[in-house]
Image (cartoon, rainbow, N blue to C red):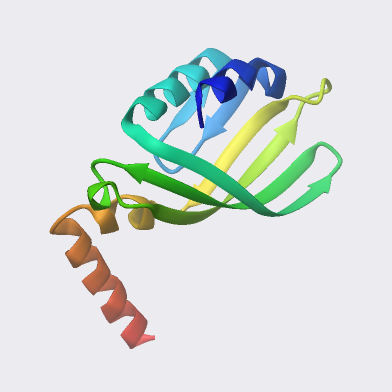
Length: 130
């Protein structure tokens, strides 16, 4: 994610794109660009590695790992988060539906002081119960 990515969005995303992730739902390219600009202001580094993808017709599923650094999470140390995106294309080949699936706890809650220790403890107990 960088300024060039925001500038390229109109060639990649439809004007009426619907974007959904575990925290947000927004409609429209303007809203998505504003969200991305705001996100870039708080993130020190963010890049995606696309590992697998499946395409059929006007739909695709992409498995990715996001690598990011954020001053408020893990004291700015790198975080790697796995996720999946469901993409649907319009007749012009632009993305009109972008839905991200990832573990919000692994992204945020586990890296916040005090709260992170509690979340990791609960996950550890649940794993032991299985």
